[in-house]
Amino acid sequence: MRNWQILTEESTFRLKQTARGVSVAKYRKQELRGRHPLTENTDHGPQIDEEQFTKILGLIDSGVKQGARLACGGKRFGQKGFFVEPTVFTDVTDDMRIAREEIFGPVQQILKFKTLDEVIDRANDTQYGLGSGVVTNDLNTALLFSQGVKAGSVWVNCYDHTTSQTPFGGFKMSGQGRELGEEGLHEYLEVKTVTIRIPQKNS
Image (tube, rainbow, N blue to C red):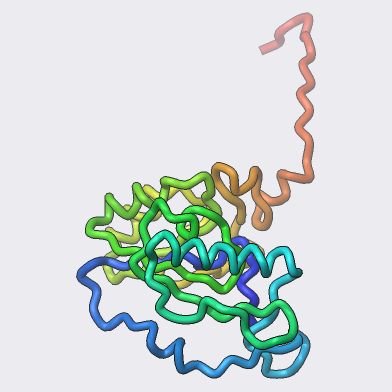
């Protein structure tokens, strides 16, 4: 079940201009089971409250007004509850609100890029830096992206895969410190410095 309200939601998708065979048409035909999140087989949960529901619809509206192409979704889902249709925008530019603000809803933006250096620079042009990912068959591309992007987690050919051994936390406005892993234990410790003057050195 998804409600797209997690901090590492993959809401921004950057696609190389030379990529082929990528289509959002299947989402238009997808039958969604939007209902109570505890109901069996639910795959589309509601937003947390009316305020968040209204914020998401407002951001969708801003995307349309700023010139992004609405590929699918974009409306309220059903007549009861705070459900929003899974929404995909294409032809998105970096200056649009939907590309710069955290939406916390079922809205994905597709932006195109030409080079690795370009996409790293554009990905870093944000006040946030919690999670990122890259899909590639080239190990050098994976390593260069991982080194260059300013995010606390980088997933290669997977996404949002976190275990109890992997430190988790963000850069910039996405938080301080880490949880999980050995680094997570440091948040519960205090370091004390004790300095003792020794009157005579025996060695």
